[in-house]
Image (cartoon, rainbow, N blue to C red):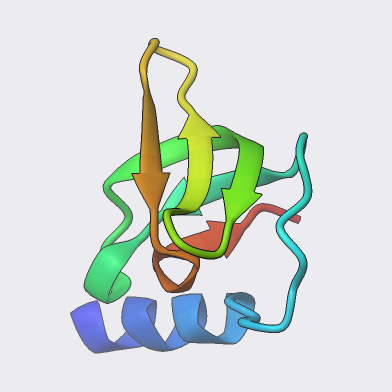
Length: 70
């Protein structure tokens, strides 16, 4: 089952996608969704993507670990 989910998440991920402010994302490192429904605040090539989470807090995360919510 975990391989099916990983495969589906890989299809949803697009490393060429520009992560603009306001875009909704999930945090899914290694194919496992760990945080849901975050909002992109900023993107910096050196630090990654700053994501604000609905339950408070924010994180700088790697672009590759994020899945865009359609």
